[in-house]
Length: 354
Image 1 (cartoon, rainbow, N blue to C red):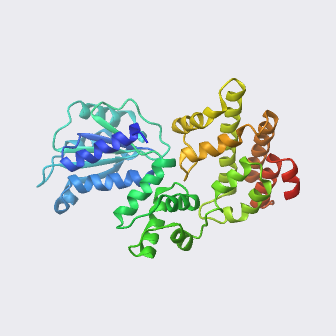
Image 2 (cartoon, one colour; image 1 turned 120 degrees about the vertical axis):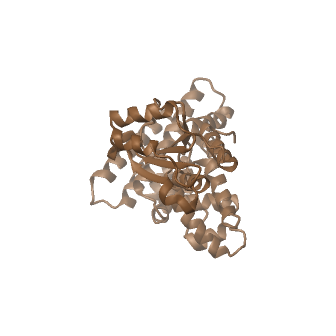
Image 3 (spheres, rainbow, N blue to C red; image 1 turned 90 degrees about the vertical axis):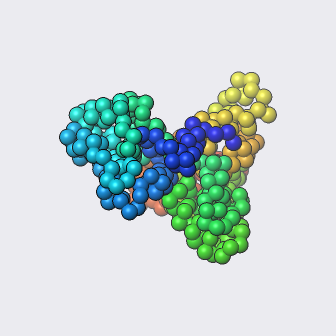
């Protein structure tokens, strides 16, 4: 698992905090609010003396600042400490005048003031920020990176979680790191020093191997409608799981497999499909809570069992299901998901399931 640009940015920040040689300004951004706020908390702990925190830490929001107020914040020297810190949340909401003040400050930042910009999830990355502002991105974690983060987080809690248990946890909770931390705290208490295995996750979280969204998706890929339909109620009962999320996950699977089918039809050897899928996952994100190589292998194995017309029919059914889930309150979510699975897996198995 090679280091991505965000990985390198986060490591550079961590190294700077350890050495005490932090930059003049940082821009924390990305979709993972928990890891972003966690990094801010650690950064403040590393550079702000608790005894003078009230004097040397200011937290403001960009839309509330004027040119005068921002200029005053950035020009105020530290009191009884080596450094002041100004945290500016939602910097994208600044108007033109305070933004000009920020740009002038960044041209010659003083050594005793640290500026930290924190953008909310979904904010467009401001590529026009001065070079003095060091960007650190915190994207949502997926695949191997998510599992590695869970195992590292468990170690910080004084425990250890095996990869299979980490994958099972994600299957139940998803990739929202704040929710995962809450469950890891619960699991650490439950395990009481023992290694957290799949049995512990089943007992504490309530999800079993073979009854996850991953298992449902694998059943659909294999056109095993009976098994897939039989898993719907269990999957939808898991924490933070919704029918819309199930439909979107199936749509991503179908799109990737349809692309793979087109590549094979164009001359790609079928044996190279797994590698092709892993590359897609690297570029656009893969299935959550699952090692990408494993997902790619399963999807590649079933790709050629679907015809072009079956892929088209599956995507039409998924679109109809998405619309139905978002526009009606009459039909049960489980019924919508069952209907789309039967439509996707049309054939002998689908008929027997119906």
